[in-house]
Image (cartoon, rainbow, N blue to C red; front, side, top):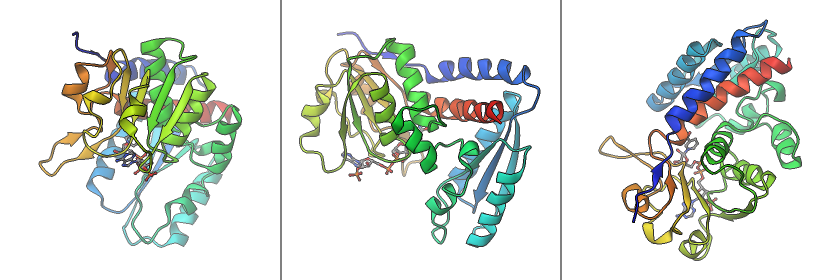
Length: 279
Ligand code: NDP
């Protein structure tokens, strides 16, 4: 049996960032992303630093707004209102999670839909469900690109998605329906998950449960996309898929790291560019 081909998210994301850089260079204005980070969460600081660095490398401008962990709701609302009104800011990113006393959704919904580069504002989610052009959430947008690059047209394929978050699972299902896939959507209450997964041409796992997807769940020739990233106690990271075992059965597979993650950042740049082009 042949091992699966590894989908190289790093190089596909690099290609996308290169195209974004060319489009940015041809634009009369410089697209600007404002990133808001509240508190001291070390992982969030790393994620935001990487996003700011990616902006700079692609020729976009970035503004980092660092707020203390005890920031009051009114202060965060005021900052978002100020950035909404700032003509030089095209995209606003609110890094999650927020400290426990701040309700993330209150602030996500406060970001103007035209600057909502994470695509989580209800206006943008509604447009996505209606099949209209919108700000599509970055990770599902990136996964769709990986799938199209790997498999070509997706029409008629049976996609099984594990995970139904608003951030990933639900928009992913919408994007695949738009591509005329048949979508089975699974979650923690799904019965007999392995049997459903074995029917998948495309299996996408986004649960945050390390290595829960086993080789026996995979149809030979399936394309397996691992969205999960869990930081382990030993300092390493794990995806949701038992990579070594599943690689022996699947036809294509994304690694963790180096699969979906780089696409998420590239699509954030793409959304910021789109916001600037639309303004
Ligand atoms: P959430 O915790 O919001 O959602 C997890 C989903 O997985 C839920 O729908 C839950 O079901 C389902 N689930 C959990 N356990 C099981 C199980 N045993 N069987 C079946 N379904 C299960 O997570 P997110 O969607 O935000 O993220 C998922 C993973 O993806 C995380 O590891 C996250 O770090 C990673 N991620 C990676 C990104 C990247 O760029 N690579 C970007 C975004 C996320 P239920 O709804 O019933 O509770």
